[in-house]
Amino acid sequence: MKILVTGACGFVGANTMSVLLDQGFDMTGTDFEPAVRLRKDILESLGCGSVSIAIADLTEVESWKKLLIEIKPDVILHLAGFTSRGNSPDAWKKCWESNPCTVASFIEAAVNFPEDERPAFICPGTQMEYGTAPMPWKESSACFPSSAYGASKLASTVLVEAAVRSGILKGCVLRFPLLFGRGQAPTMFVPELLVRALRGEPFKMTEGRQKRRYIFVEDAAKQMLEIASRLTEGETLPAIINAPSLTPVRMVDVAHRIVESVGSDISLGIGELPGRSGELEEAWPDDSLARELGFRTYTSFEEALTKTVSWYRQNFSR
Image (cartoon, rainbow, N blue to C red; front, side, top):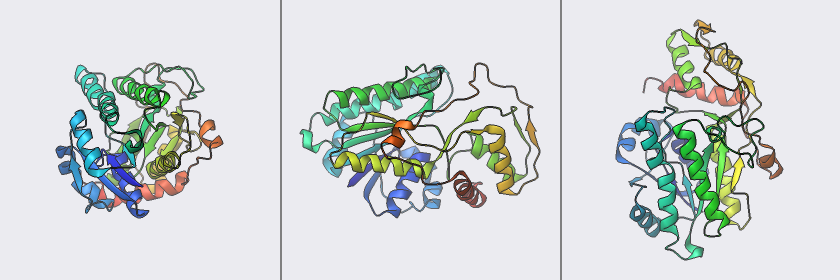
């Protein structure tokens, strides 16, 4: 397969390129110029420093057409997007422009090509699409996102699902729970605690009773690649699949395992922060459909944490 990876400089994109390189795939990356410049060291640390990254504005239909003509990909892993968890006016605007607008632009571009020249289109979804919906979160569940990011990703999913349903696109949205791994910005729980532990800085958190499911980012890449392979081989898959993930774990237990893995004696300020209003104590996508379809995880939490800690130990100052 010839694969085009959008958002190649992002957390999921860079790790996906690393997996593709390891497996010898013919692939091209694309992103916007500031990301290429700012993430150069991260790409190099993941072994992707020599990969050529095309500059493209994916909100523009003509940019998509140019990529489809020049690269002729069999598969697009559409990992580009805006991931802000905020609800400011600017966040709503950027989430809309960067998420559903880029998907809509791709679909508009793709229908200009003969059906047999349209690439399979795989993009990551997020558990934040389910929002405040009651558990279990199945693919058929109604979604109630409560953030700009969750709403914009749900809009992207609806576009892909409609295009697949109408027969104009082979595609799938793989909805992920919480992701972690090498190269993640220290704005999420796992990388922030890792960086603080490595620096010997105290860390404040809630009581950590929340129970969540995680997936190692390299496993996420392998799952998307398997979907791509099965779609290009002619298999029909559901347009939405909740990614298989690791066993549910309490956040306080995650914190202890991180500190233990780092070998740090930092103070964990458990209970020093209040819980978020309306936050569900148990929240994760139900992955039974994915497992019925033969998808799986590849890496245990312990092995994934060891690889992640090793990367941060060498690169956390970047």
